[in-house]
Image (cartoon, rainbow, N blue to C red):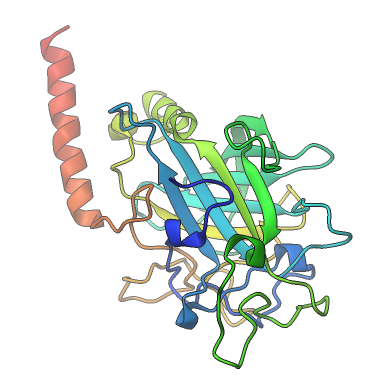
Length: 300
């Protein structure tokens, strides 16, 4: 059973078209929004997980996201002070459709936003309309069912990690901008039903293709992780993209894209993080939706 404080062994790491995140690219100017990872040692920067509620429905469950950060900015207070965005491409065209946001000041919130039109490269992502929001409730060890966010050292969550003598498994970048600051995990969750409701409403209203009126946990998605200093734009660190080596206008690509690109985007996965062949899932979706449309016309 996945929980906010569960070992990362229960989560699924996502490849992001490049290193999960280089430990020394220093894209952010604060440790709490600097993504770090060491994928060659199985220490990634971005993970997903899913708890099914056991109801038999494909639209409910807790959807978890975990990202590894270089440390905590300022005095330890158990709060990640930056903004964190999980970008989601549900149509498979390499352009983001939605963003799940964690952040805010003075009250932190978890929100679902539309991505701005043409959000298909590091330099083109814009934040669209907020479609759902709820306040962050920090996990304190006694509120596991009501909490939705947890910011704690990797050492506290994954005790017993070992390095190879060349790195500290709990401090991958040697403290980053703050010597000796241990890496931290930000783990947060959303009710998958809330995301389903947003997608299906957009499909019904013609904002995305109407085949997504059937959207559920079996659909393939491509995802990325990015951080920001504020909630106005994307201005800090991208998972899977190394420093300034990539033109920010180069379109994203996923690990299986033979044409290359800027990286940053996972391959097609379901809510559990398990690979889903995009061409197969797309064909199945078209067939199921066609049957659904015929059935609706037949029984009206």
